[in-house]
Image (cartoon, rainbow, N blue to C red; front, side, top):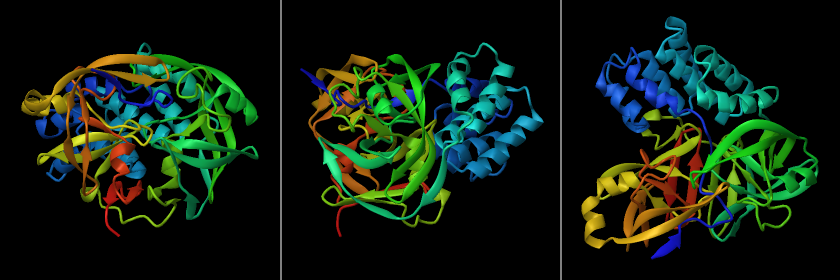
Length: 422
């Protein structure tokens, strides 16, 4: 049988083609001789690496990598810059520049991110990832995103076909954009950028998506963005043609999505599927040992339990449906063999659609954010799909999140929690 995992009009994931070399270099790091830290680092198992940090003697590089994964800007900079100073031309130093570039970019610190790209290219002038990202980082390097005002806000909830929309004002014009943790960069359509009066610039950079395609884009910067009681300066947007997903067919004023830099500026967010959306409320105390959220590049990752087994899932509020990927199939081969049915699924993103072999399971029960949720049916990709299939066991979408009465994401404490009872 055939089906489609995500609605065509919204991509499962928008990501910058960047940081591939990070995990290749891990095998050559001079500080990577101890498997306690090298193995989880190379496998992108950030929670396991965090737990390994409790052991004495962890090298500075892995301490910095852990702090970066949990979005701790100050400590990450301290450790990673120390690595760069002590071994300036090593593989560790190059990987430290990469980690810092991703950390700064997702927090809207574009000038600092650009300096890291420049340093990487000085070390490896032919590095394809750094060369691809250089034009974008350079274009944004003069306009860091900044919080001008942030106060607690409560907004009417707008859920349409599983997507969560938020009202924004840009250039005095109102719009309603999707909230998308699966996008490490906010996006607009060309007509929307024109309607808002934004200056659009060409950049020689490509972005990728869930279909595995890479497409070119342009960029624009909104000098002021208002969302409830949040006022942001210099919000960067990628600009794509109206004819491409996710914007094809959408009404005027809805052709945009808010990515991770904007969501991190909100700091805390909470919604009730049958109620309201709130953000900017007081965060929980920061305790890294209890965090169940981290970042892989700019993608939020959370811990999910299936059959007493802890798994890493990407957290994607821009995905209508949850999908399970190759690591899940590898972890539970008996489950797929006993009750799975072969199928083919179409994944659609900004670059188009691609079909992948998958297996259909009648139901999978997961523990997410402290609550049990059910995925039925469950689609499991059994071949490598694109960005997450080699390390994440699934992409957690709105169908599972909205089974709770209340969903809270705290980017200060780095926690995701689902509450089912008042």
